[in-house]
Amino acid sequence: MKRIIKMQNIVLKHRKNDTPYKRIFEKHIKDQFDISYSTFNEWNGTNAKLQLEKLLAEKEKQKNLDKRQLELFKN
View 1 (spheres, helix red, strand yellow):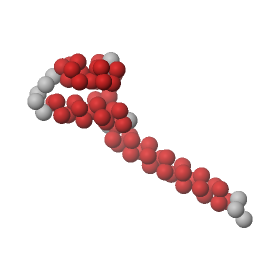
View 2 (spheres, one colour):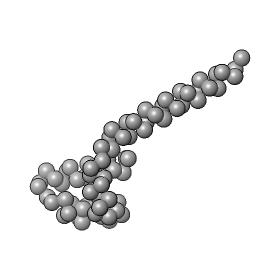
View 3 (tube, helix red, strand yellow):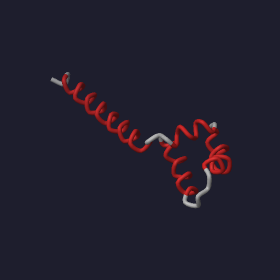
View 4 (cartoon, helix red, strand yellow):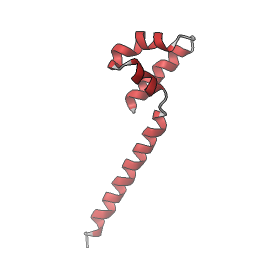
């Protein structure tokens, strides 16, 4: 998700100049991220920030569950 967010930020920076997506992909994304144009389009359509937040929240929730599980056996 972090790679997708990084790529999307590059795209946003260059879209301000009304640069076509194909040109942004060719000049700034293709070599740096080593992805195809279809993957580029897929990543652009992904709400990566929201998905990353969900993943981090789920990880935190699991950590708390694991901690409570261990406390069960302390006594």
